[in-house]
Length: 145
Image (cartoon, rainbow, N blue to C red; front, side, top):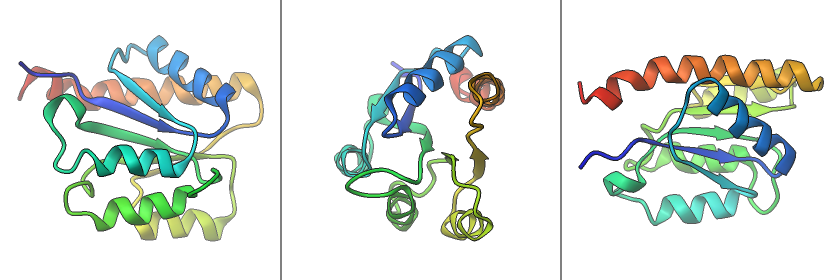
């Protein structure tokens, strides 16, 4: 039995997490989503997933940079250094727009860097667009092709 790919969301702001989940669902993503409030909880989850069983295999990680315990840059560095986890696509989804930090994320292996707009409606729209994009990317996975 094929399980739908899991979307992981790591963000310490519960309001952002709710907004992300709702807008991904509004964009048609019905994949299971696991949410983490800090980088350590995410690493603990991923550490138990290597190699990931099919029902636990993440297909995408939405990762905030500024989080307690372990920050997003450290999570990204560890994820990309692990041969069992490095293929998970990572979208940095953060309020930080420092060009050095953006460059650092790409150097560490993130696939996409999206700055969270401060305005609620703009943030919601950015997440909906991301959801539409992810829906297109996941379609071949869901079909088993």
